[in-house]
Every structure is written in structure tokens, then in C-alpha cells.
Length: 89
Image 1 (cartoon, rainbow, N blue to C red):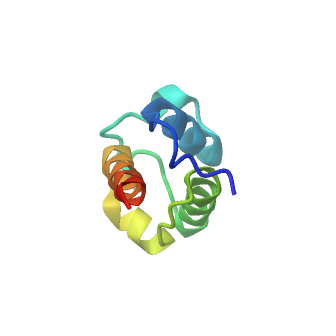
Image 2: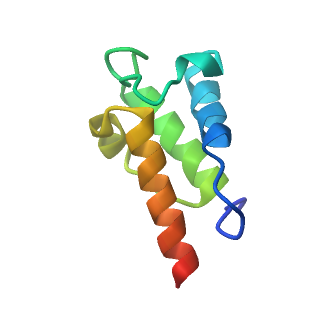
Image 3: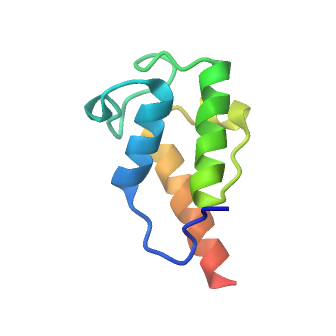
């Protein structure tokens, strides 16, 4: 697994992972862009993002929870918290 729990978290790398899943330019994935309303994320795309995040960071996010989170900023904060918690143990 390509988890990054031993390295510093890079929010821009995560932004790129999400943009690639959405097939959008990375500039469109702003901190406050709302997944459903602004980026048109549906359940299939939520699943794709969740899979890519788990593959890259080793953090599992249920795709339904991802859709509820609403914005890139909230997903970033969740992943940072998970990685910090994982590295603290």
C-alpha cells in the first residue's frame, strides 16, 4: 500500500488526487468548492475519490461520508487528522 503515514501530509498532492478523480483542472478544486453543488460529484465519483485516497494515504473514507462532508477543506482536515492519529500510535 502506498500510504504516506511516515511523511508530511501534502494538501496540494491530495488536491491533485481529487482533481484527477474528478477529471478537472486542479485549480477548480478549491478549499471551499462544494462537492455536489460546484464540482458535480455523484456517488460514483465519491467512490472513485474514496478509493484513490485509500490507495494513496491508507485512509478509508466511506463514499457516502465523503459526499456529506461537502468540501475539499473538510476532506483534507479529516485525512490530516487520520494521518496524525495514525502516526501518533
